[in-house]
Amino acid sequence: MASESSTLPRPRKRFGQHFLHDAAMIRRIVEAIDAQMDEVLCEIGPGQGALTDRLVETGTTLHLVEIDRDLVPVLRQRYAQHPQVTVHERDVLSVNLGELSSDQPLVMVGNLPYNISSVLLIHLLAQRDHISRMLFMLQKEVAQRLVASPGASQYGRLSVMVGRVYHSRLLFDVGPGAFTPPPKVQSSVVALQPHPEPLGPPVSDAAFETLVRQAFSQRRKTLRNTLKETCSEALIKQAGIDPTARPQTVAPEAYARLVTRLTG
Ligand code: SAM
Image (cartoon, rainbow, N blue to C red; front, side):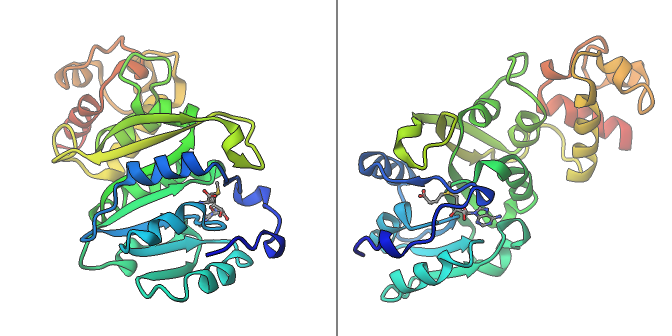
C-alpha cells in the first residue's frame, strides 16, 4: 500500500478533511481501537487511508463509509486485494447501519469530520442497536462535552443525550501537527462504551430528545422557568429534580425520570 500522494485530490474543507500523517499517532489510535478478529468494524471517513491501512493489517472485516467521490476509487483500488474490506460511497448521515451488518453490531471508528461530529453522534445514538462500541477522534471541545459530568461548564445537551446511552472516556489528546492540513483546534480520542441499559427509566428517544432540547434552550434559566409551558414545578419535583436547578446540573437519568412523569 505505497503512498500515491501525487495523484491524490487536494484536501476538501467542506468535508472536514484533515488527514493524519503522524505514524506514531496513527499507531496509537489503532492500538486503542484494539480490533478483534470476531468484530466487524466500520470506519467513518477513511479519507486517504491513514488509519485504514493499519486496520486492514489486522484482517478484521471492515466497512468504509466515505462521502468524497474522488477518494472512493482510490480506496477501492488500494484495498482491492483485501476481500474483507468494503467501500461504501455514502454520506454517513444517510446510512442505515443495519444495511452494512444486519447480524453483528459494528465497532464504529474514525477520525471524524469535525463539522458534522455532534450531528453524527446524535445520528449514531438512534442506530445504537447496530453498534457494539465506538472510538473516535474528535475536536477536543466536543470530547470534553462527552466526558463532562453534571455541573461542569462543558456539560450540555450533547453530554446528556450521549451520556444516557454511553460511557465516554477521553483517551489522549492529539495536536494539530499530526494532520495535513493542520486543524485550528486541538483534538482528542474518545472511547464510547454502551451502558448495559440506558440510564434512568426506559423512555422514548424522541420524547427524551425533545425535553432535553427544550431544557437547554435557555441554559442560564432555571428549569422551572424554561419548562413552564411543558410541566409544573410539582412534576419536576416528583422527578427528583430541584425546580430551581439550571439544565447543566441535571443528570441524564433525572431527565429520563421527568420524561416518564410527562408521558406516564
Ligand atoms: N481517516 C482519515 C485520516 O485520518 O486521515 C480522514 C479523516 S478526515 C478528518 C474526515 C473524513 O471524513 C474525510 O475523508 C471526509 O471526506 C470524510 N467525510 C466528511 N463528511 C462525511 C460524511 N458525511 N460521510 C462520510 N464521510 C465523510
